Every structure is written in structure tokens, then in C-alpha cells.
Amino acid sequence: MNFSSYILGCGSYLPKKIIKNNELPKKLKTSDEWIKTRTGIRQRHIADKKQFNSDLGFEAAQKAIKNSQISISNIDLIIVATSTPDHTFPSTATKIQGKLGIKKGFAFDIQAACSGFIYALSVADNYIVNNQAKNALVIGSEVFSRILDWNDRSTCVLFGDGAGAIVLGKNKKKNSGIISTELYSDGRHYDLLYVNGGVATNQKAGYVKMKGKEVFKHAVQKLVSCIEISLKKNNLKKNDIDWIVPHQANKRIMDMTAVKLGVSKDKVLATVDKYANTSSASIPLTLDYAVKKKIIKRGDIVVFEAIGGGLTWGCSIMKY
Ligand code: ACO
Image (cartoon, rainbow, N blue to C red; front, side):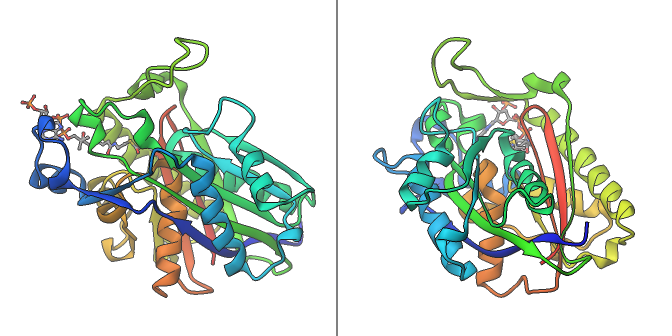
């Protein structure tokens, strides 16, 4: 293998409506203080009833393509990571392909809950390095507000809606671009974080259910171990990491992962305060935020990491 894939550009989209912690329904008997202290969340964006997942993903995709400075006609693979698709089938990816007017290549969805973007990135990277695709559009897009029980304060305060996208291209340089992706799952923990509905169970979309404390414990331990394994495999040291772009589940998980890893918390990029947990959209949303703010620059060593329902988890190391 004498080439790798790399991120040509990124983009994101957030619905206009913002709900601050103190604007949440009174019946939840929650408080800004409780949510901020436990999670770091101050507000979340919520999609309009008329907005579908594909609308959010389409907006993010358009910006990513523009920022990549490639012609839309050069995209031959579209992968959407999502747990909140427009329809049971066809895929949201094909819907976005149609909206973008792309007539070639292939498009499909990936579902790995909050780890979805890392899974999608890994798949796209493999297609590119194996010469089966030239330029991949990888989107994380979610409307979690549609699968939240707005009477359950232990879950509904944690999530938001949004979409982020990247365009992945082929890089001739060695040891540049995506250096490594590591994926894991352990289905024994299926019931720690799940949605209590589905086509084959009750024909309903269902609501998010979570054993928060247990997810927390698994998250820190599994993310640290995954990153350590990946660094070792690639002869990299913790000090080589310039930035960590974590899945934005919760500020305390992000900080504790950095502490246990031995990486400064200053290197952990957070948008959870503004966007809450947007599941598979949270990594590309945070990446786009950091690139726009010129925090992440070309040549930086960046680590993406995520854990979610399944349990699924993984990380990706790249030279941006
Ligand atoms: N507002 C006020 N009180 C609340 C709220 C709320 N929104 N939610 C729960 N409480 C109450 C509970 O009823 C309970 O009250 P009680 O002691 O009278 O019974 C008390 O707060 C403690 O409840 P716990 O569930 O034990 O709260 P905990 O301290 O564990 O914090 C949290 C909950 C923030 C979810 C925590 O478990 C956590 O950080 N978990 C990690 C999982 C996570 O972040 N998941 C995000 C999605 S998963 C993912 O993306 C990987």
C-alpha cells in the first residue's frame, strides 16, 4: 500500500432552533446547574418538524464539498452514519446522493450508534486505500430529538440534532492522512444504551434508554485502551498527539479519558456545551468547528474517538 486517504475538507450544519438548559420543559424538574455540572451541556439545537435527517446531512455535505475544493462529480462513495434515518429503507445516503445530483458511485448507511462516524470513516478509508473509490463523502447526521422521551429527564437533556461531513480523498504521501482506525464492539452490553423500539420488535421508532453510570465506566476504560493500542501499533507516543476530537457524549467522560491517557485536557476539543450529544454527528461537527476556528491545522496529529450503543467503540489517528 503506497498511499492513504486524507480529509480534503469538512462542513457542518445545525438546525436554527436552540433550547438552553433553562428553557427545557418545567415538568422535567431539571436545572441548568444539574445538567452543566454532570455533562458540560448548556444548550442543544433541535430540528424543525419539517426537517429530515437527510436535510441536515445534505447541508453539511454541501459545505464539506465546497471546502474540499473538488467537483461534486468526483465523489464516488457516500456513507451516512446515523441511528435516526429518514426511512427504514432506502438509506439516507442514497437520498442525499439524489439531492446532491450525484449519478455515479454508490451510497449506503452505517449504524453503530454514537461510534457511527468512526465506523464510516474506517470503511471509507478502506475503499480508498484499496482503490475501490476515489473520493468519499462521509456524513454523520442525527435527529435524536425524534427518539427522545421528553418525559425522561435522565436522557432527554443529553442530546441534540445536527450533522457534520468530510470529504476523504487519496493521498500519495506515506505516513500522512488517516494513519490508523481501530474498531471494537461487545454485544454483551447491548442493553446499557439502546432504543426500545424497532421494525422487528414493535414497529415503532422507540425511545433512548440508558444505564448512565455503567456507560460512563465502560467509556473511559475502553477509549483509553483503544487509543493506547492504536498509538503503539503506529509507533506514536502520547506526546505526539496535537488534538483529540472525541465523541461529545459528556465533558466528564472526555476529561477523564484525557487524564487517564496522560494527555493534557487542553488538547481535548469540546463542543458539547453548545451542541450537546449529537451521536454520530458529534465528531465531524467538532472537527469543522475546530478547523473553522483555525485550532486544527494541516500537519497536526489528530485523534478521533467514540463509544456508543452496542457497545461499539473505536478511534482513528491521522495527520490532518
Ligand atoms: N435533572 C435533575 N436530576 C436528574 C436528572 C436531570 N436531568 N437526571 C437524573 N436526575 C436525578 C436522578 O433522578 C437521581 O435522583 P435520585 O438520587 O433522587 O434518585 C439523581 O439525579 C442521580 O441520577 P443518576 O442517573 O445516578 O445520575 P448520574 O450522576 O449518574 O448522572 C449522567 C447521569 C450524567 C447521565 C451520568 O450517568 C453520565 O455521565 N453517564 C455517562 C453516559 C453519557 O454521558 N451518556 C450520553 C449518551 S451515551 C454516549 O453517547 C456514549
